[in-house]
Length: 356
Image 1 (cartoon, one colour):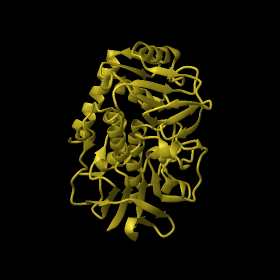
Image 2 (tube, rainbow, N blue to C red):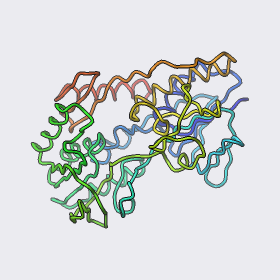
Image 3 (tube, rainbow, N blue to C red):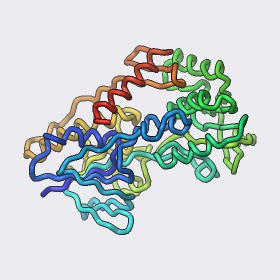
């Protein structure tokens, strides 16, 4: 039997499984999925778990059940592309013929002293659970600082405002206005929502140091009951250790068919892949669809296309608590209740089609 090994049951890995099972997988191929948890996690909703507004089990989707799919639970410590083996904790070796690396990302601390040691994270399910514990145990009228006002920081700050109206929430943003990568109309709407709801947005911030319970902005100390880091990501360490070509963000450079330029048996999907768009669940799923197409052609011995169609992204939807939101669909900016309802609908559809 030929062995296809998928590292990570995130959005990309999950979509590959959905497309290859129950039909689409040649009879002489078996799949092994490697993940730390026994379910797929809805990472785009971690902010709500951290804020205490979504239950843990609402953010889980079961992996497909199929006799040709086996699941290994563990942490990947090394990927040997030459010998074609995956090393798991406790020195277990897993051989592969085809490999899909979909291990996602972790926080990037930009060499800020103390940031890794003294801040909380919403990058993994485990870390998000610990962040939830911390946030919900803060005494009344405590201070929470969120570093980084991208999508994660904005959604966490707004959800936490609704969950804990007693807290002082500070959102630190490096730009002149929040979400500066979006159209000004959208940025202004979100910034004004925070002002109206009593969230302290600190624009033009520069976090220089973090100590236990103290955040330094431009070297000025701010006492906090909790500090959450949402200021940038990088591929996980085992991917950073791979001796392959990477871009300036540390993501793996790929051929147009999503495999390594030097190895047609090794694909990379999602946050670890160097692509012309910012990482997102949508992008990982679109990429996974194309990887499945290439795999089927490889298994059938067919010629591979030199180029693949551009991955079409439907747009971005973000929430501001449970009733308001914002979005960008092509050139169209959506503000208020409509994008929030759309986001809830997209999440429901995803869970429904994933059999949850």
